[in-house]
Image (cartoon, rainbow, N blue to C red; front, side, top):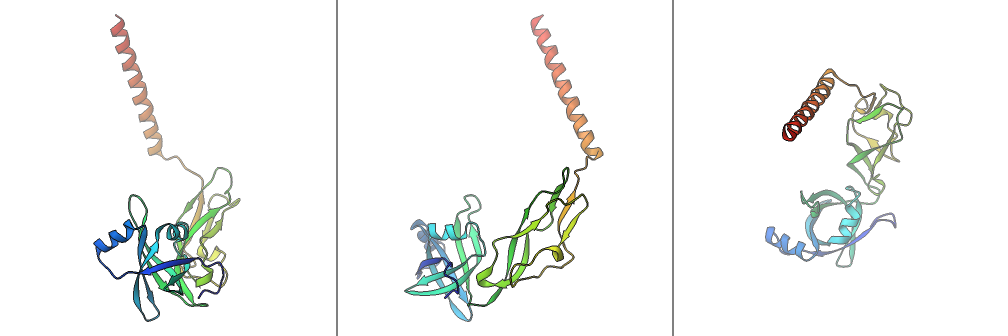
Length: 215
């Protein structure tokens, strides 16, 4: 059981059929195939309610849930979510069993907040950081504040505030966000000039055709 009342509950059914055909039948029944494993337990193949599962996982790939099977609940962490590459619907979920107070290592997305100095932009060098944290307190995102930072500023892993009771496993010197002023290169200028010349030539050609037609 989870140590927080806010942990969502997903009611599951045990699956006894396997393979692609069985998985398709499960999805047609508005359910999602899943597997629950870990802590030395034999894997349990499950069918989860499609809509409820989507709501729990849509904004949090590291969601911790209570999976209820045959009247018993087991706390679990979503470890791998397989999605349809086009529709982005959930095709399958791997859940790993976790215990109250247990720490897990997960990748947490990085989210930039604030506005850097006028005329500058921020470049996000990493999309996620690897964090070891209590299973029931996994942050949905790690916020990186760039408010007022000037051109040339660099925020490294060592500069990022740690979530409660968490450790960031990435190299402390690894760059996370870089602030810079957009610079126009010679190639950019040449491309702009070529585009302008092509536009002028097209306009002149169009004007000549109109004069010829009138004559």
